[in-house]
Image 1 (tube, rainbow, N blue to C red):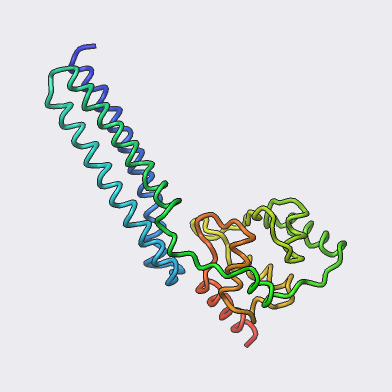
Image 2 (cartoon, rainbow, N blue to C red; image 1 turned 90 degrees about the horizontal axis):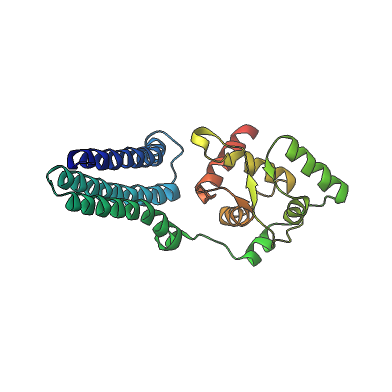
Length: 237
């Protein structure tokens, strides 16, 4: 393969990776911008999403610079070994800049957003439901019927009995932009636990839900609970 053909091939590969990264970036950033402008934006989500947006934007900018530099050097070099060198450098940098944000988010970037409440506090404030075994089974079957979650019966039973120490339940219903339907989850649990979620501390509600349910990247927070309680009070009025 001659030098112009090599340059074209490498440039196409790098350009394809840039298009893919651009799609991934804008797919993640647009929902954040929409929520901030038009959605159910809360104080907690605002801080968390702002961090995500800034982090991803910095890395996407660096990714773009690495790609542009590699394309520029490939285009303006005739030595096939130098072309290969800049292609490899570009690929390595682009992959690093693609995966590093996820590593940072998972390890250190959001530690100061831990708003957990000790389990003792949860158990003090939230009282067990008084359902028997058959009633718990009926509630479980009904929840599966409406596709609320997919879990084993023992997980749901331990949830009802406030026993904890089980794998998180994957909450399935979603709303706009595939964000978990938190209002439905709150109403579902409030009914099971005898209307307690309206009365107890919002942080306790959040801790209980986040410890027992997998809501992906959208944990329950006090603002969500506050808006749900307000809506419930309006329904009663």
